Length: 525
Image (cartoon, rainbow, N blue to C red; front, side):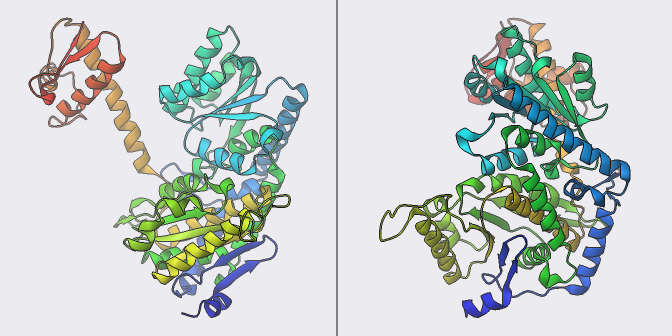
């Protein structure tokens, strides 16, 4: 393999965005130019307002967020511009008043992953205008850790609640627990609360009823995993003092270059075709994201949702079973040298790597730390050395390089991967913009809550009587108290699991292990 020759022939560089895409670490692949004509046409239709999410009869317009002139109607364009103006005005007001020093963001999935990644990437440390805290789960212990850090600071804490539908259970739980904290210290939660949600959602109606401090819009054409450049991301980032103008400008510049119809001049098309080649167009492989920059360490978490929720599909658009998907994981360089690179080098070739390189090491000069080299020199050496070792083992690797970490280039990366996902989905004829499987887990969770309440009511009505899980299943079925959605054979399993949890957490519910662990008896005392 002549690496230099391959690099000369297969490197992409764009001077406007500073983006470099090095494909010399994988085999040459066909550009599928005829097929890409259809892919480009589909993307053009999407950006002009075609219905993409047919499950909910919705357009998909995150591209309009960084260039409102592209929006299909004047009204949508004006809403985008007005939302940005209100965000900047509100952030300026908060900074000038100086009351709020902390920002507690309550959201989950796209409502937290994007803001968390970009906030960490662009943080100036002590120069940030506010301190960011996240409630992004319904884990009570996790909430307590955040609440403990905010103890005595509730007066100067602004709470941002983000839920598109207003019905997200985890977000509601975090909000209710936070409201209880404000109540406990006799402070008004509404005077500290801001909502980002769709008009007339449950959250929108609540904030209006309670007279919250402020609200910002979300639109049905913005999906959670592509919402970071909507108020979901722009508001918290503006409050923290991040460069949201640069972020939007970088995304818009990336969009322009990734709209190129010449495949070889379009980095998102090249990246999507590389994924298609490396997976045989069938997915199934793992994509290992290795950013050699601490500020990009949360990028793999962000990409997990963007890629896996978009591409993980059981059926294609025609209803054929395809089991499509690309699993994403990653750590950071050079930490990966001391963790899972051993398996990447010596284990099965069930993956491909995407290296993320940032040329600028730090703002100022660096001291020599050894061998006439700086810490940054060593970081670059580890990146190149890992890549060379993988090449020697015939393992596939792509390298994406940006000049530096700032709002502009983070915007470039976000838009690059958004469009790459869209192109790959079209290449494999799947719909990247719906996620029916996500609802399955939510419905099952609701079923578990219903079963928990049934069990508590049953045991409280029979205090002092103990039962095994199979006995309870039989009694509840006999009384027709079990949901018809719960299969008879699985009922004892979930009853056992729920009651074991309750015995560890809820006063009044207890358990006693029988002769065998599975014969544990549960009762209410």
